[in-house]
Length: 108
Length: 468
Image 1 (spheres, rainbow over the protein chains, first blue to last red):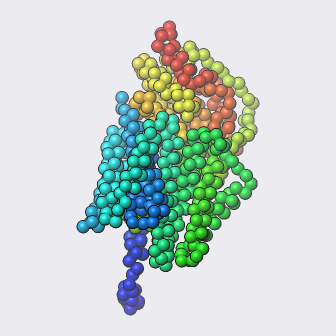
Image 2 (image 1 turned 45 degrees about the vertical axis):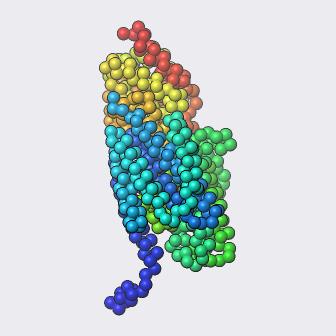
Image 3 (image 1 turned 90 degrees about the horizontal axis):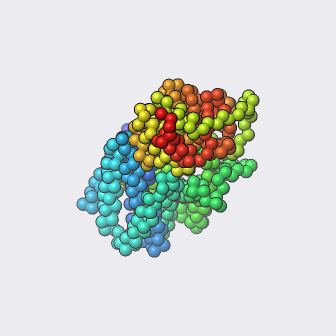
């Protein structure tokens, strides 16, 4: 039993795979945080909420920058450039329209 | 050092994004949430851009400028068009994920496919399927909402539709399985392109059988998919910030979908595979009663003498652009000491929360907007329920008519008010194609005509009419 455990530890773990597990961990935890936070969002604000989360999930911009800007074949960089354009559009229009809508909510 | 900057900025951006959503719990703090989101985004972008492996800056600048050129006008659309804009941004989100996934696949294969782990390849396949199906599905939804001519508004159904749809998805996943197991095979890139094609096709097939009444749910589900495709991108790039931000978006879409489904008493599978909104023939319960029509003068008098008026707006109000006239009516009545509340059904409008935004634009204070669950207990005390362009959400058939497609859907109890006034453009049934017996009830009076014109007349009557 103990031998088996030792052997398992001694075996060189594939670093990339180990990292994927911690990423999965992060995914599960952040989903729970998301569910908790979103449940408290005011029902008045569901439309701005959707445009705000749209803008936030356009964090895909980070991945697009890496693909578009790294030293890769031009065709790959074109794919990255289009992705970057799409994400930037979401960021810009998402944040602007959210703010525009929220400005309209007045108490009196 | 660089590694530390990236990791720290990711943690900071994640915290800011969570605060951003947290502040949305109250309209008073919500705008702070936007600032937190913008700062988080800037931090993440700058930290990525300064990495030494980013060498083609011109490319990035061009793409970002193009994003601004398209993004700014998209943020200025009229509020009735916000659902289309939202669906379009889901499409962009899906497209970005799909393209990055494709790029990563060919980069990985180019560097030696055997080095791509099965886990990573699975993540790439998931990203590409989710991304591209969200892309075409959301484009279809955008087209339907925008009422583009060549995209049919009514649900398109054919025999064996669900088999075709699910078969398409299964075929894409099966090809994905082959690519994961044999990443180095000569046919693998072709199989990969096959996945892309099938995912694009599946997105279209998924949306064509869905009718207009289900759009709020569909937008929410697509929102969730867009988030999940960002999560998959996070797995591919091993970037935890992408995973957390995508998970926040995904869980938001999930919660909104559940709320929308509950508000229509439907399940996910029923929305996606049920083809709601086809013209249903319902059996008329009891003998067909006649409408009773009310004059503007009479309606104004009823409103003026009320203590509590509950306005029940539907999308018809927004189509008629009547919300500003409604605001004038609100002013006229509150000036006389009448309490006016607005009853908001969760699916009023074409996306979650749409009606609140439309009314807020007309300067109606958000404290007057009341959710369905809260208003229903007040309805028996309500003197006048004023239904403007709403139909299915006030149809009492939802309570008992088991053969009705809206059976079980929670409704606003307009029929329990002492008097009900309903403004309706025509005598045709509503979105779901169902007769509404509220309109022939003993205490219901109809005002036929364009909502904007009718309410304008009511306001004129109240402002100048000799009814005092």
